[in-house]
Image 1: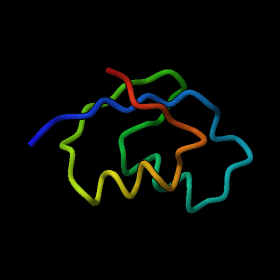
Image 2: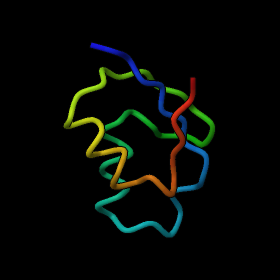
Image 3: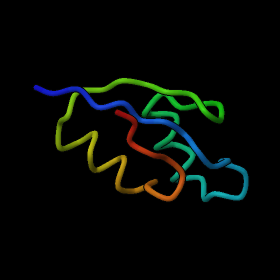
Image 4: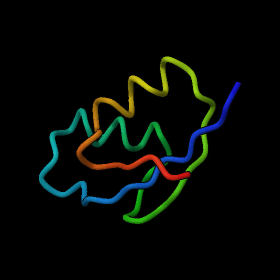
Length: 58
């Protein structure tokens, strides 16, 4: 499978607790951090839930 890189570009302050949990599950705990994950449907679903806080990096 392909890999995707996800970068947190907006602060989690003020986000609902559910979105904070998704960021933690993705491994994003600080601003401007980049993590690499497999391109699976579950990861893409998590990214979709917090799409306003993260960006896909190439």
